[in-house]
Image (cartoon, rainbow, N blue to C red; front, side, top):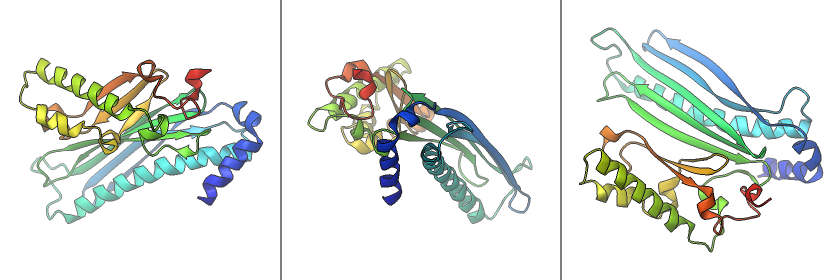
Length: 250
């Protein structure tokens, strides 16, 4: 909390300096190989960067963003290593071991929002099948830093959650029907019901709110990860004009 307060103070004192420097996306990569437990890890994921001439306060913002993303990646790696260590067999019949691949990308929206998506693909020897999970990370330098959920984008008295839920359910049901599935409506109704927890994986582009549903949330495993993109222009009357999406009202 103290760190966040200090960042907000910097933003208040030096707004022109901050906005005169452009936030960019760079990549961080590394790999790790453990011969004893027979696993291999590769990671390539985004970081925020204001360039070598960035002021100290602006560098503090990029550090805050990057530390948050590093925490997500480190937690993924820690969970993978724990799963591998719990297995008694570390080599498959083809001689291969366990693996974890982490990839990510990010966008900078209106110069103030850093919206990142981290994708993990893990294959642990002894588990039924590989696993793919997407995690999102959103940060706004002008609206309190880390955006913990989509509620921070909208007016609280608006009916944004019902609108998002109804839009996603309609899109998901249409996709299921296109693929010949007419019996998973109950999964969709439950997994995309108007509960903010159901929309915990989300990202922004200049004109879209992109919702991600990981495997099993709204459909059987065969569907994999699904996503729904909602035009922000559809929700202008629900968006908080003083929040992270204030650029839409300029």
